[in-house]
Image (cartoon, rainbow, N blue to C red):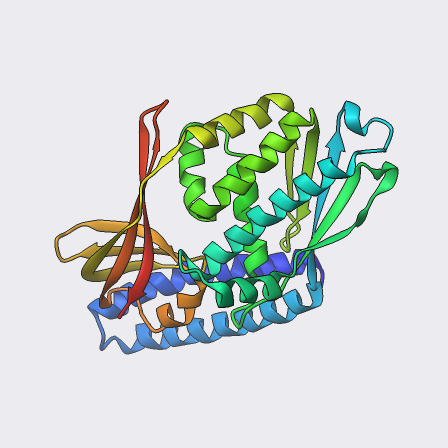
Length: 311
């Protein structure tokens, strides 16, 4: 199966998730509606089949390849100092690792979780391209039982962050990579700036979409300064009780509390099986971690909610 066909599987899953969510709302309001219940059951069977297809195809994919093409005076003659390369690859790899860890476990840490992420994504220096100015990193695709890949999501979210073209988008995208990814990404950008290097970062996603970031002096420095100006509050745990409004396999949820507050946020991959037990309209309770992200230059503020547990 080609990447284009895998892309169609992913697209069909996303469309079915929306249809299922709509049907779950209808069933919640009319639980005895036989026709709607049968339709919902049919679509759930279809999406389970698509999950299996995505799982099998991502197993065949095996690994994700990221290309780092260095540009600049230091790279002109294909003889880049080893310190430049090791600093760049180390900090970029740490960014992907931390984002993967956030997607899998949220803010939960510990050596066992770190080892699991390390073994799952297996980041490696893959090789050197022509002229010794192109370097390749790889990570294991490692799909879960639903066919989703932590490293694929981590790469997509990281590219979306570094391609943020305005302060509002930057604040929005920080929530998708996790706070711990900001420092290594900042070091990566600083290394490029100090070494007077530009970079082309490239990754081909499973739905045949090319992610490309053309890092040049202006946008490298701009992103570095923006990241380092942002203030992030200490996380606060908040108890909640309310109705589940939306849920997606990409780790997004919405809950309307009994106090009529709407909470939009993320849940980590290790909660996905638990979340599959819930349907739209279900009453639930649990703990959410609240973090506030502020850009003091623009005065823009965003509140991040991350689900810690639910029942």
